[in-house]
Image 1 (cartoon, rainbow, N blue to C red):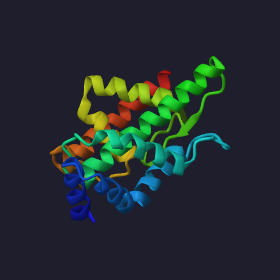
Image 2 (image 1 turned 120 degrees about the vertical axis):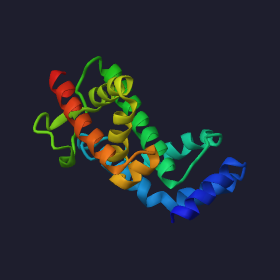
Image 3 (image 1 turned 90 degrees about the horizontal axis):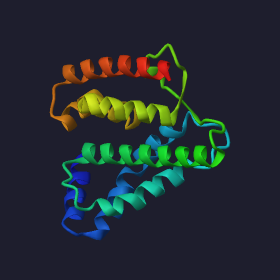
Image 4 (image 1 turned 135 degrees about the vertical axis):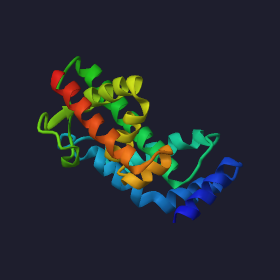
Length: 185
């Protein structure tokens, strides 16, 4: 699948509009898995569903034709970031409408190994990731690709052009940093 996705990405970048549709068909289940992962910790009855999140991501991807796509991993990293942005914008607009009303929690996955907090506001998590990106962009990217994108260590290493041990170190340090930031909030 990776080679097919890469070929379609290159075709899309060169102006083949049909290539994006074929690419989405190829990776649709992965995108739904990512969307479910994002929405897993949201309150019951959340109005944004996984399918809607995938479709909104697709609509935003149409404007990304000029990106110098590298491969499937790069594509999934960009879609993970888009999904995160869509959900954060959604949460911010809902919070603004309620003037500080109920906060949408996101459950931090067990793989983060956080003892506290078990629940964190999606906006607070996003703010913490943005603060981490200002200090260490690579560590922030590792969290985004692993936690939100669901990529494996090897895929992250390939996407970032670093070794797997480097990814594991970055992951460990980023988790500790986020834990500290989220427990302060």
